Image 1: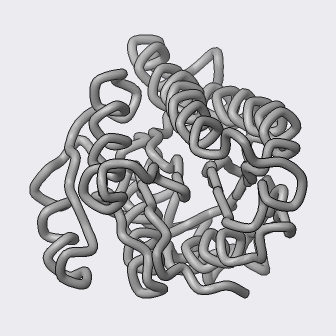
Image 2: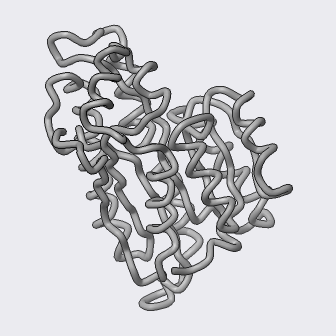
Length: 261
């Protein structure tokens, strides 16, 4: 695998859980990291633990066009000398929702779709446009000599319909299709687009999504030990560390004893 020294990364949803673990792992491997989430306080606390001068904080909604532009600009201006764009974008920001199309809270549908699906699409588009511009004039093997990656967090429920979270799962089904389409479009142009689809991960996700704590604990007891954010972070780093001509298209990872979804 290649070192991440010199890489410029953006991680959305970095205030906790998978996003924070990914940011720590990328920084440990030498990347400079722009941290994004809605909550500025936890981002600053995380930045204080990373190597000095190797992180920047851009707080805000990752589906907002202005925040997306600010993240990309911060990567270029803080770490790319004003000319070199981010070359490792981890699209992790998202939210869950307990329930099916029949039982979930309809008042939360639009925000979830905007965050999980439209936000991912917007960042793929804007990061992709900048990465494409940075490779103008290159062809063939030159396109892949320097790795350029977009890594998108999906879910096992984006491939297996789950009766307890089918509305959330529908957004991840959409994300999976979005990523595959982007891979086919951008891969031939030297940009790797990778899908990481975890199963049960122990984090604050379950509480925010509104799952019953007793049900969560019962499930974790039945299939545990479950994944922790660092397990997912290692896979993200693995994909981004491959030589430029190697593209890890998608990875699904579950706790060993998780049978479904």
